[in-house]
Length: 238
Image (cartoon, one colour):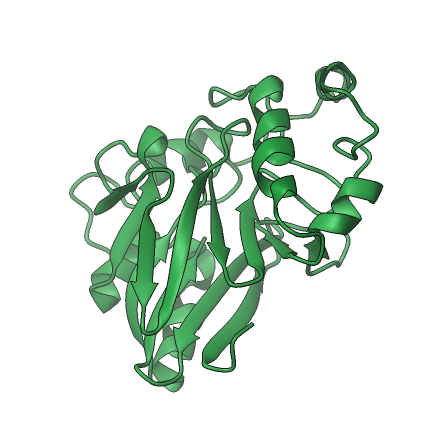
């Protein structure tokens, strides 16, 4: 992590969601990743307290377990919302594709297409850090049984793209349910029970098919809302 980078990892307890605030010390330009509606006021206060200018709001995917705060933050700060092109229903300002760059100050975030949990999942690479959304969690991964999920695609997103980074690369996920805050590529290669290197693609597909998970409680509310960046059509949360 460069010395000129401001880094905050923030937590929303109901959905166990991590939000990440990244800022450039010299220019005060900032990016936020995966904000949550319920913690929007906290995030806006922190941005203002630090004297930052929010340029971009990055979504790793269309979430099913919480309503995003991206629309509220855009209305309050003037920042642009960026979302993977395959997930963008028209509410985002920027539809991201593989290799697109998001620049703030002297820093540049690279977009990596990592579908599988949803069709439009994006992982964001900055320095020695990967923000993986639900594609790769700490000792786990996102489910693949709805929202155009595919176990085969998720397997290759992790193995071919995320695991291609050096072992010491830090992974910051969208969620954690056991109190962990980060992991590394090397640790997940060895310790992830679903995706460790000794598991074949067939092993992974079988594991995911046998999970039998309940649907998220907010599914029917969250997905339609998040396709509108967390705002109802015509709504102007401010």
